[in-house]
Image (cartoon, rainbow, N blue to C red; front, side, top):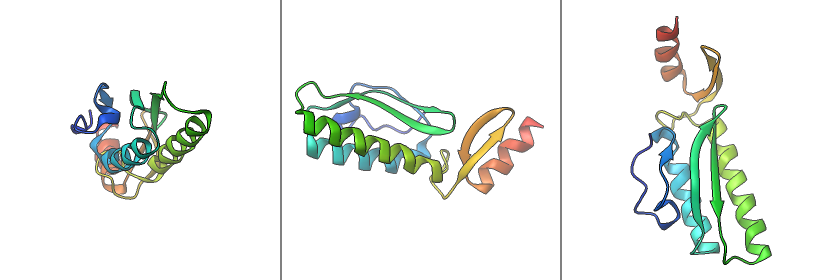
Length: 116
């Protein structure tokens, strides 16, 4: 589970289901989305196939705002492909025990030693 991001309106009603290494990405995402539509909210935030996934809603947004938010969210999800989910250092996609993860060399070595 990620660190507490509930101080950000965008994440105020959602449980974050990813590691704390992506907190900076999520904080930046919230700032950008809130500047586009202050009423937008995340509905689900998780790791899937080693990447960040953010599901959201913005019922009061215009079509242009919806398109812009969609692009912003997709861009931030792509950022997670190069950041360790555990610590935020530069990372890459790897497989541990059949599970895709994005991790730095140190966390990959630590976890892969446990999976045998």
